[in-house]
Length: 332
Image 1 (tube, rainbow, N blue to C red):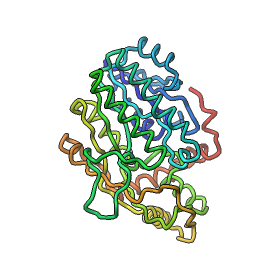
Image 2: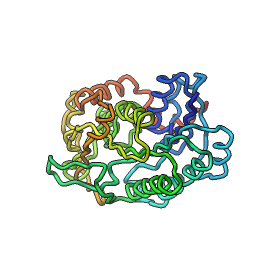
Image 3: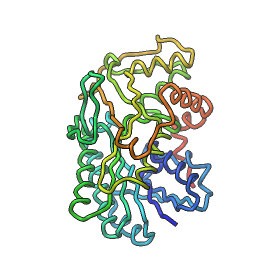
């Protein structure tokens, strides 16, 4: 039986991955490790918490003594590392938290993985480490694009990427790095653009949009991201980087107006606000390398955003509890 440690499994992408893997592989033991910061939410795992192949561990990846003890006790086969501070605005306010978790925490996990001969370490990163692209629709990030981060968040992720690569080259740790475009889908914490817009439009509240809303992002449904990591975990070539993107480029204002139209609301809910510091113009990923490995996305943006909006309509209690903080009271 494969024992897989998923760090950050109470977050958005990690949480969806935990659900995906626990249900798809009943013969795998899935360990969900999370320190339950403000964005950590265990209510998303209600449907699997009683399954025999699922276990939650409340632990901080920067706590080296606890992490080393856990690895020695449980003898994990694989590590899939999502745990990270990820909100760009918060990284601008206090970069030190991002350095501690994203860089130092990753280093602790790498040390424990080397000492315990982990079969493979999957490091889940972001396209933001590449910096920004111009608006030329023919230009894309590839795995060979030099790292050029522009925010404290993306700089901390680029640093952790380089640490993972160094542990592979220096110590022979089997690794893969995945770099994804912007994710969306069920259980997305409502501070991010799509869930924030959906919840505010439903509540008939103003929707803030940075600058003129013309910044471009490549959107990836979280279920497609989970299937990509699953493929890399099982079939990824040791030491390789794989970009995960859906060729679903949209400006921020397009995304907001699509949600408003779908919910039969009016554009007067849009409120343009002062632009974010260092706001990258455009991200876009070429996923050809991953597709040659056998990956194919299930959703395009039109089908994915409709599925996501319908999920938020059907699960109002979940995101309302998130907004009120009630989810913090949920304990296994």
